[in-house]
Length: 181
Image 1 (tube, rainbow, N blue to C red):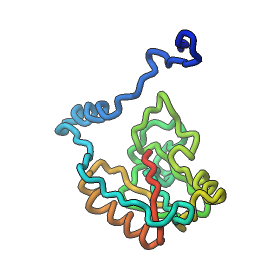
Image 2 (cartoon, rainbow, N blue to C red):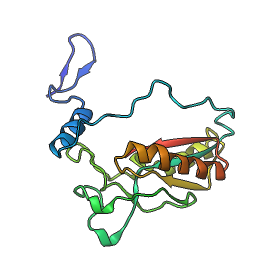
Image 3 (tube, rainbow, N blue to C red):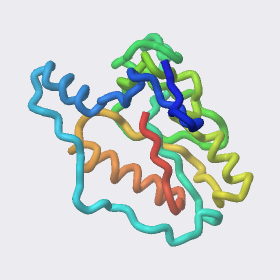
């Protein structure tokens, strides 16, 4: 039940409406599987640089963790249960001109409080195209890229990230929008 603060129009959320402790849930999950405590990647120095080109003239890439649909590996539609068979393990690229069939059944998201019905929540390609049309972004890169979620910080840092950077440079982009699912 929601309540309103006295003499204001401020509406308080229901008592049970609290953030989901996903970081602790992840640690607990890996501990239950017998792994040492999960350590989230956390860096003192963040390897980002300011844009050299104004966003209104920048070419932008979209990088997502959504997986290409694989009909042979089971249910991957909105609301599908977790499907490890739908995971992918190598960076992929697809043309950004049309909407690719990407899904998120391969990741552990809170299926009780959300769904995968709106593709823009994990693949905001249409929204980025709208931003280009409105002049807020200069252009989109010719491809969008997929970043694997294979739970290995070493592989992500040493293999996947350099490959994503290589592809973004090949596409001549100035910036990337990263969309984890």
